[in-house]
Structure formats: structure tokens, C-alpha cells
Image (cartoon, rainbow, N blue to C red):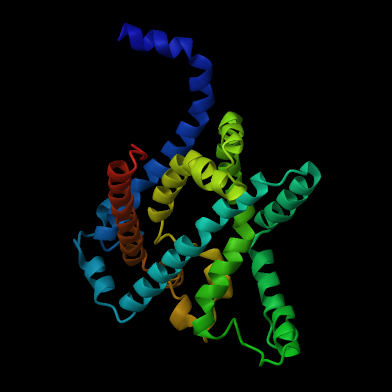
Length: 301
């Protein structure tokens, strides 16, 4: 006990820096978990959480047996996997390419151009997407017509929704996501590259045998976190891009919770859906973390 107190006193400044983060998570992440119990009740506002009648798994059963359950799960999982397969490798490739740029001026220019979309609000980003993909006046459709093709209704055709959503997300986030990989690349010992050059290794060989293994622990950790949120498809962008014509491909868990919980005032049902989403993500996180620990000896814990 005395040893622990001495260690805390010795690192008091670090604990003080960590304190606001700890308070934030307690207040905004853990305390609200008290309200999770309404997923197992028929919540009545006048009776409060404790006074509302307990109904067990009634709302979960309703969600699992609903007409739209498989459509919602297919869309959410499909977008999540699409994001993982396309959006996860791109920042890694971008970081590896930026790391090979020798001109500092050109490098800063590339970083500025790729980082800038991250700072656009979701509303502005979706507005730009609508402008670029407009069937008659959009830049993309004008190029298609210039090459002799027919204009495509990207935003109303369900077949195109996932592609537009994911690729626009890659464009907006790839530069910002590459920062952590660039930081990992900067920690690689330059002497390894000098030795490889002396042995006649080409640039691609040095990237494959030095840079990639050097950032692999970072890649594994971020992969675990990404898989752990595979069903956590955001609400704002999907909702802004959603319309009655692409609903069959754009209706996901978050939009379903919005319609039932906010518009329909079915708080218990929407809480049950949200809890199911969180539990599935948590199980995926634990599973992938365990697999990563066995395969690569790198994991979150």
C-alpha cells in the first residue's frame, strides 16, 4: 500500500493529466449505463426507470422477429465490412507512400491536401457528395457522359449506396488516419534502412521487410479496434444520404433506433436495439483481441 502511494506521489503530475479523461469517461460513458435497464422494461416517463414494469426480453424478441431485422443487420454488417476491407488498408498505404517522399515541401503539400477533408463537417461533406454525384450537373456524371456513358443515379440507386458511403468516407478520413502510421514509421531505426541499402535491397524490399514489420503492432491494435466497432455505423452521414429510394440499402441499426426511439417515442425498444448492437461489438472485440494475441502476440490486453 505504501509503495503504491509513493508511486502515485512520484507521478502525481501524470495522474493529474489523466484525471480529466477519467472523469469524462465516468460521467459520460459509465454513469449513463444506469439507464440500460429500460431495455428490459416498458418505460413510462411518469413512473421513471425504477417504477416502469419489468418485461424481460420482450423488446429484444420484438426486434429479432421484426420484418426489417435481417435488412437492418445485412445493411449494417455490409457497410461495416466494406469500410473495414477498403477503409482500413488505405491509410496504411498512404502513410507508406508519404514516408517515401523525400521533398519536405511536396510532403507537406500532400499531407495538407489529404488531411483537409477530415475537418469538413458531415453536413458539408454530404452536400459536396450530392453536388459531385448529381445525375444532370454532377462532375462525376459529366465525366461519364463525356466518355460516352449514361448518367448514374448514385444517390437513389440502392446498389450504389454502400460504395458511395464507404469511398466518400475513405476520401474524408484517410489522411487523418494515416497520422498514427506515420508516427510509427518515424520510430523505425534508420540504421536498418542503411544496412538494407548496403545489402542491395530495393525501396520496395525495404518497405516490405522493414517498414511493414515496424508498424505491424500498430496495425494490429487499430484492426482490433476497427473490428470491435464494425456494427457501429454512424448515424449522421447515413441519415443525410438516406432517402425513400435507397432505403433498402441505407437502413441501418442507428437509423432504425432514431425512427423508433426518437420519432416513435419507443424508448425501451430502441434501448434494446442499441444494447444488442453494443453487446455484439463487445463480443467481436474480445474475440479478435484473443485471436490477435495468439497469432501475433500483440493485443489490447
